[in-house]
Length: 437
Image 1 (cartoon, helix red, strand yellow):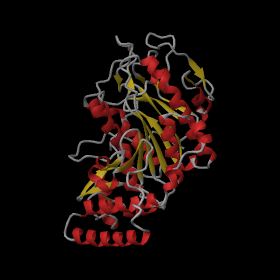
Image 2 (spheres, rainbow, N blue to C red):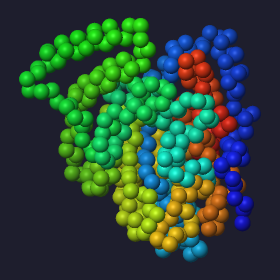
Image 3 (cartoon, rainbow, N blue to C red):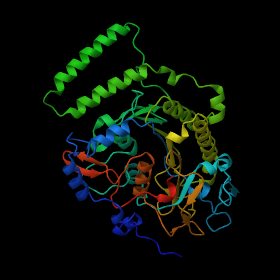
Image 4 (cartoon, helix red, strand yellow):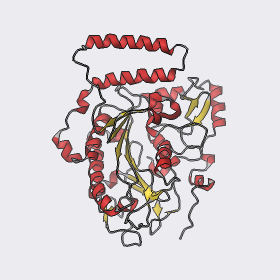
């Protein structure tokens, strides 16, 4: 058996691309200072403001499907039937010759030729409290700042686009509201607007006693007061407040996004919580939102893992397949990066509660859309699914890959945080060439 990698030592970062393949910040700063391109916009700025302007004109978008709690790779993308830890489910042939996935995903099996699957994911944290933020931040080096989640990073790097809607919308069960924490050091403006339980933000409609002209007058007064307050103060919080109000006004003008769905769409996506949320996610993408995150909860199957996945997987299978095909048929898939992942996988070993525990050592991530090769499977685990064979990929590698797919050169683009240049992705990692077009 392959020796286990100590993921809690510096050895773990050897999973990333060697440093000689990444442009050093010192070389970058020398080049940009000499050319006069060094950004000077303070907190959360970019070293290349001209690049930011170009990216803001891009029509590329992101659908980030977050499977919270940890989907079992053995009951989904990397089944090991008839082995010690394989469990009761069979594998089935997909539309890619020789590639098999769990029988719990028959619809996904039919579109495997549209997807890129990496079965060689190896990360560090085996707890939700550490794994969720670190994975969604790309596991950057500790530089004394809180890095942004992927959605906030894309909102900053690529901008709002032409929709005037918030650039980062999070569709999720439970409560909604503005989640500024996702933005980290970029500042609260780049947080997520959460749509909870598929419901529009509260107070989206004007009171009956307030007409359009009165509302416009109030907004002019608000803008004046905000400008007075911002004078001589750090602009980030005033900018965030103004941005939230402006985005709310844009949502008020797009109330049809929250109208009752077409019954045919409900049938396609599934009349389930995930199906309904995925459908809202598609509407948001169709409206031009830059980054849409859709959450699915309930995957932490420490007990009764097999019945749990027998219930959860069909919902994911239907809604995931539906949105990929829907985006393709609407001509949107070529411009939308689609990623589906958890914070880690689940243990091959089956515990005493017939469950699987947390397992960051060997799991899978799937993607498709803009910049991504389709119909490819890379990475391999050993016979029992315990460890990754040969090349393993850390989350930093995926951040470089996703940025590259969106047209962002992560080796040359950096944040500028109060004058401190910071890489947008782990600078010892690099793009996974086998996943990119």
